[in-house]
Structures are given as structure tokens and as C-alpha cells.
Amino acid sequence: MSDPTIGVMPSLTDAISLTAVRRYFSVIIPANLIWEFAHMPLYTIWTAGSWKEIVFAAVHCTGGDILIALSTLMLVLILIGKGWPYFAATRRSVRALTVAFGLGYTFFSEWLNITIREAWAYSDLMPIIPFLDAGLSPVLQWIVIPLVAFWWAGRTFNDKCNQ
Image (cartoon, rainbow, N blue to C red; front, side, top):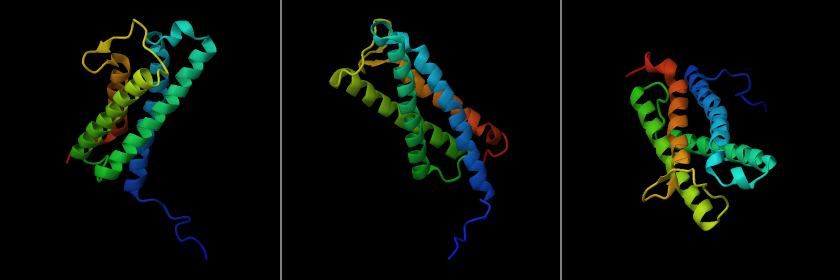
């Protein structure tokens, strides 16, 4: 028996939503790679590691960033994403919750890997957020990059679909 979905064109809404996801990741991937290399001097590996260890750490962490971005966005789209990216209210909700989940994971990961596992350490150059004991750079990374990525992903919808 043949598969009835073979050769069937996806709906226009599915195609446009997929385009928005692709646009989101077209920012997420290179921006996180750049950020990882740029904030490497804020970690002790910058002075204690070899250049191969630094490159591996940046690429490895970028892979983790991509997985975090993918899982948080998909979770949010499953929970509240009906109408994304078409409706402004949904875009705002998806953006806010995705950033919140990304930040939540970032705080947990920084605590786990610095305090519990001691897998990495901040250098004296890393600004620390008081009361949270988290580095400012990774926190800003999970605010700035997703917001820019959401702007890029939804920019064609921002003016056309503000219902």
C-alpha cells in the first residue's frame, strides 16, 4: 500500500512556519558560535587550556546551545504555539516563554557545572550576577541571541500579521 502523504504539498501555513523556524536557527547557530568564542576569556580555560581545548570547548558548547534553543522553542511551540508566527500576541508569548526557559536552563547549567561538577570555572574577568552567582555573559547570551533570532524569524510577519 502506498503512503498517501508522498507528493502532497504542505499547507502554506506549515511552509511559512517552517521558514520562520529556519530563519530563527540561521541566527541561533552562528551567533552562539561567535558568542562562545568571544566570551571564552571569561572562563579559566582561556589561560589554562591549549588552543585545541579552547576550540573544542567553544564548538562543544555551541552544540549544546543549539540543542537548548531547539528544545526550548519546540517545547514552547507545542505548549502555546498555535498561530505562530502569524499572530503578534502568539509571537510575543512564544518569544517570552522561550527566553524564560532558555534562561532557566542556563542558570541550572551554570550552577551544576560550576558548583557541583566543577566542569568549568569563571575567570576573574567574568561579571557575576549578585544573589544568583551566575556569570553575566551566559545570561546575556540567552537573552540577546534569541531575541535577535526571533526578530529575524518573524520580521516578515511583524507588519503584515498583527492581529
